[in-house]
Length: 177
Image 1 (spheres, rainbow, N blue to C red):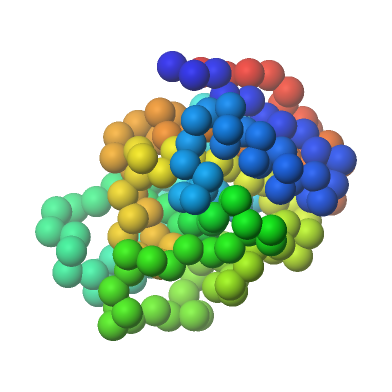
Image 2 (cartoon, rainbow, N blue to C red; image 1 turned 45 degrees about the horizontal axis):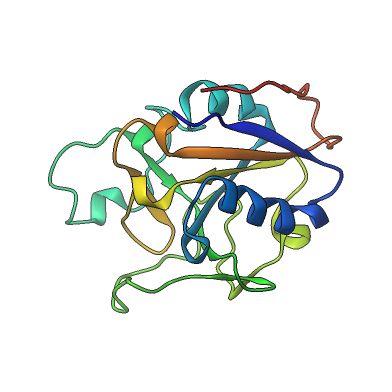
């Protein structure tokens, strides 16, 4: 298993270059870069489980989605951006999604704005961290809904956080498996 780390940044202006470096180092596909924004208060859970979600998490539109034929674990479903990190600014990728699929802009997705470009200084809110996932270990269900193919820790590559943030959560500066 590859060692994953928390990369602490001075500002989100450093994010794009650090993300690109992490993608190269982890040998991930830069044209299918999968990032999830989540509250910094969930950093410990993310480090331990590979996801900030659990069995009590909300699953958006699951009851309307006919593709789910079996009972799902909400901890296995998450919401994220699929980016082309070779572009500047990074571009949201929507390909492979059926155009007639319903999309509710008012769905309870934590801090995901559907726009053509991902601009870290605008799209990452105070008190958030960013998880980088291996898109090969994830199944895409809709525009921003994904499911882990196995253990979330296997899919998690890196975590990005500000050194100083508006959040009271202490820094956790160790590597994890």
